[in-house]
Length: 53
Image 1 (cartoon, rainbow, N blue to C red):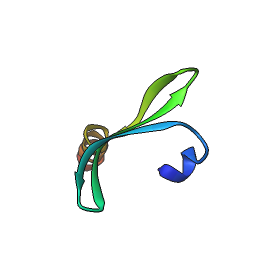
Image 2: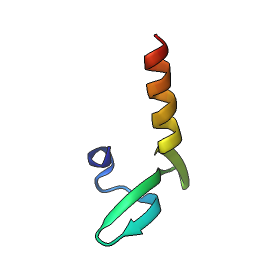
Image 3: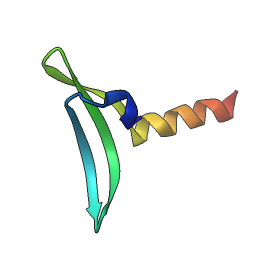
Image 4: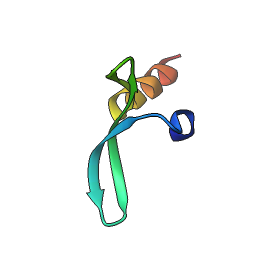
């Protein structure tokens, strides 16, 4: 995920625990605004849909 956004402005939301970060939401800046490109909720929904099919 992160490699796609090298050189771009991003915002990462989550909890820091020592040197690790539990990421809740990953946003990239597009046209002057941040757009959510990944979140734990999006990931859960994707896996739930895959399990249903």
